[in-house]
Each structure stands twice: as structure tokens, then as C-alpha cells.
Image 1 (spheres, rainbow, N blue to C red):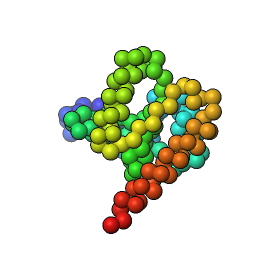
Image 2 (tube, rainbow, N blue to C red):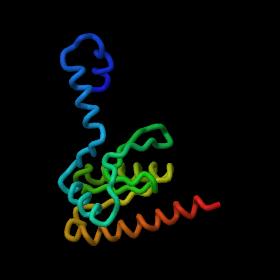
Image 3 (cartoon, rainbow, N blue to C red):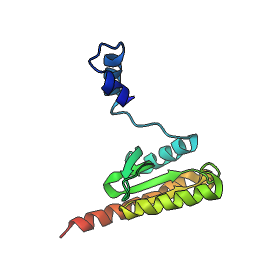
Length: 145
């Protein structure tokens, strides 16, 4: 979409100016959740934690850019909800673990929550909160020199 607008801006194409205005108006909106489970996790987390960033882009050491489903960039903490069957079984799980390790290399901690956490999302959110608070404390301690 962006490349189309860039190529056609100023060429008198109908709709380009309107699309630019629409995109400007929507720029501050949160990106949508990728699944119902992800939205449920976000809802539970935001009951006990600050608002999350959705689909947050992180550049890995190899230059690849990945999107983290739920993130707090200030402390480099992310939650990735989803079941292994959704991510492609064993091979998908292996890719997820490799991606998590690549995120760890650039300072991110990834927490994975599968569908089994749906049974008690508020308990899962409290556990994530404990990790969040520890990361927040550690990041503050690292600033003190």
C-alpha cells in the first residue's frame, strides 16, 4: 500500500489523497490481534499491566524484521500467544524456538502462552506481571551507574 501511494502521489490518481488522509487518521490505532486467543490474552494482560504494543517490529541481529504479537518495548518483554498446531506442529515449534533465541540475542525476553493457559488467563496474566515487574526493576537498576 505504501509503495503504491509513494509511486502515485502527485500524479492525479483518484483516491491517493483520500487514502493518505485515512492512513494519517489511523496511524495511532493499535494493530489488530491475529486471533481471538491473542485478543483474550491482551485483555487479561491489560487488566494488570500497562497497555501493550501489538505486532511490534523488532530487527534481529541478522537484519531480519519480525513482529512480536504483544510487547513492552521499554523493557524488551514480549508475549506470544498461540498453540503449536497453529504454528505448524513440531517444525513450526522449532521455528518459534529459533525465533525466540534470535530475539534473545538482541535483548528480548519472549514468553509463549499456548491454548492451555486459556483455562485461567487471569492467573497467566499475574505470572506475566511478575516477570514484567522484574524486567522493569532490572532495567531501572541498569540505568543507575
